[in-house]
Length: 165
Image 1 (cartoon, rainbow, N blue to C red):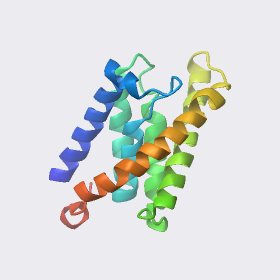
Image 2: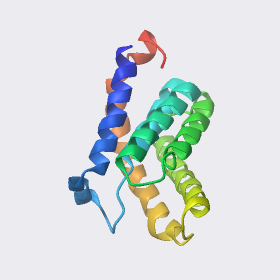
Image 3: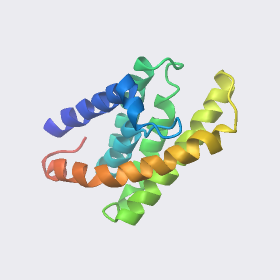
């Protein structure tokens, strides 16, 4: 139960950090990493489809609440990709840094495309965001993910022995 609450606490903290103005310090060319999504990818690999879906949904809902977006717009892509990554996590060697980099990069691209498609249906959106936002964010997420994955692996190293999400 401890790791369940720790996961939920980290999801809330990453959303608050990303929503705070001081996080703009980490902006490169107007693009910031999505720490919460990187954590969702990690939790999906760690706990499977239910853990990925749960963390994606609640993390996205917290971020939707904090941001000024349509409610559920950020939650749905994160929930879907958390479930998808968790479903295939048993087939992925998630301890390998190259696999981690490819996973974070490709998931970030898919999240961006999925979010732009949803924005296109609900508000005005431009597919030029792929070059200006999605691709740079995917690269940024990959770099940050490679830094955070080993830290989270140490924090959650005993979690699978104790419980499942």
